[in-house]
Amino acid sequence: MNASSSAVARAEDVDPGRVVLLTTSHRVAPGLLSWPAWQALRTADRVLCADGAHPQLPYLRDAGITVEDASPAAEELLAACSGGRTVVVVATGEGEPALTDGLARLAGSGRVSMPELELLPASYDLPGARLLDLVQVMDRIRAECPWSSRQTHKGLAKYAVEESYELVEAIEDGDRDELREELGDVLLQVVFHARIAEEDEESPFSVDDVAGTIVAKLIHRHPHVFGDATATTPEEVKEHWLRTKAAEKRRESVTDGVPLHQPGLALATKLVSRARTARLEVPLPAAEGIGYELLALAARAESEGIDPEAALRAAARAYRDAVRVAEGIEGTERAGGVEGVEE
Image 1 (tube, rainbow, N blue to C red):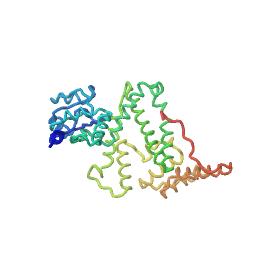
Image 2 (spheres, rainbow, N blue to C red):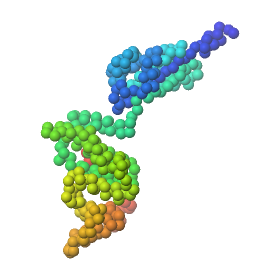
Image 3 (cartoon, helix red, strand yellow):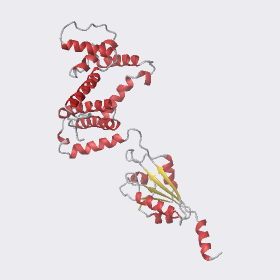
Image 4 (cartoon, rainbow, N blue to C red):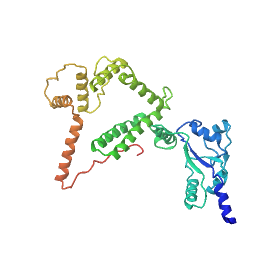
């Protein structure tokens, strides 16, 4: 065996070690790491981090882990691992693309013995974690945007109505991309109003208070899910919901709480539905006029499980298409949207 062959053999006998790329989520409180992550950190020969302001660093140091402020190139990292050593790299928010690209380049060259490479998520996003991002973005917009910083609940009220109608239109059109966007616009209304509510001097509340209220309400009104009650049909669920709601709000009538300023057909349908659910036999007013005729149509639609508002919108769209044909305009198109909030 010549000298060159001996050198290659000795190089192949050296344990190339192990590199652990530790990733964390900024949506999880710093220091709340998985057990495998803590094990890797405690047993590592070296722990490196390129970001001296990384939110995890104070907690790692409190736990007695020495973290070096270093951003090694791929070749330097391989040298640090040589001899069976383990190096943990605490990834920055960008995920260390330069380092991982360099490691991939070296691995593809076939000229070096690569260490064991492991991607170890130290904390995971839970479902709904991106809502935290929305809250943070809204905080900044409220503080720094000349328009958003001046808005009030009353000033934004119209947008809640407009965005709700745009959401309904996306649902009826069956456009999945539009549906996702419009759901976001409706969600923005909730977060925006909650952010404004934080500034109220007399009775402030936050988006967490909003979420906590609806969570408590849902649990209380679903005893068949979270308690011992039984409900086997949607009708039984609806009856219990209304009974619980009436008890909570101390309502005298099943019609209490029905918004009287909603569109007429929707209002008529809601009242008829409340009466039917309460098993009240209430005849329709025996009066003449187009309003009473519409009331009868709304009651008929409700009894047949039809949403009269949706049915009328569908008929109106068909009429719009007929108008466009009469105008000589080929095909149909989705009606233009209305002004929204920070779209």
